[in-house]
Structure formats: C-alpha cells, structure tokens
Image (cartoon, rainbow, N blue to C red; front, side, top):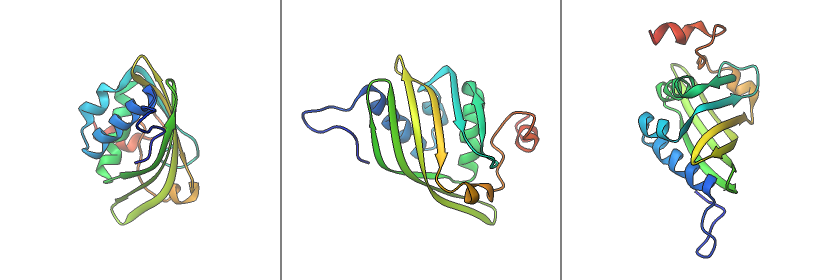
Length: 151
C-alpha cells in the first residue's frame, strides 16, 4: 500500500487511521473496525446498485461490512493520500456471493475527526457491475432481505 508519507514526511492523521482500519478489514476484525468509527459515522455509497445508500451510525455501518465479509470481499489498496481530516484511497475490491462475483476498482473519500472515521463516501468505478451483485447491505426499509436475516 502506498501512502503520502516517506521517511521525512510521516503519514497524516487521516491516512494513519484509514491504514489501520484497512488492516482490521483485511483480518475481518469487525470489532477492531468498530473502534475506528465515530458514533455518528455515515457510510455513503452513491448509485442505484444493491450496495448503495447511506448507512448511518456504527451499527448500520458494521452491518454493511458484515455483508461484505459474507461475500468474501477483499481490498487491495493501490494509493492512499490525505491530510489530518481527509484521506482518499484508490483500491481494487473483489468478492463473490453465490454464483455472482465482482472485481472492480473503487475510490473512497474518508473524513476523520478526533481520531475516528466520521464519513466514508465509497465510489464504484463500474456501477453496472456493482448492480449485478445480489447483496443487500442496508438495514433500511428498502432492503428488507438482509434486515430480516440479522434478527
């Protein structure tokens, strides 16, 4: 993973938090991921595909990442840059759900406050491919399939 840091320029606060979050994500350690989230976190995924929407609060955001874990989603970060409040990453994300698979590029804009992630805006580079994955990641009324399975 590349960062906006070198021996004389340490990583920014946001880059450090996001790097540690990705380490927890790679281990599928939802509790460690939770520790990086502000109580009022909002995870936004633009688009009209099944993963899109605003996931508000820690529980909805963790639920989203639980669904990604069920699909065995992985991330390979190609670039991660930022300052003390914002980080932006460019990564390959892939996984499968049943007979469906997804392997596309993504970009996330992260916002960090007081050492916690308060917002993530997660952009799929191929919206059409993301639409084909039958995974519902919202606890909201529009995506009842997964909400019912978590009771």
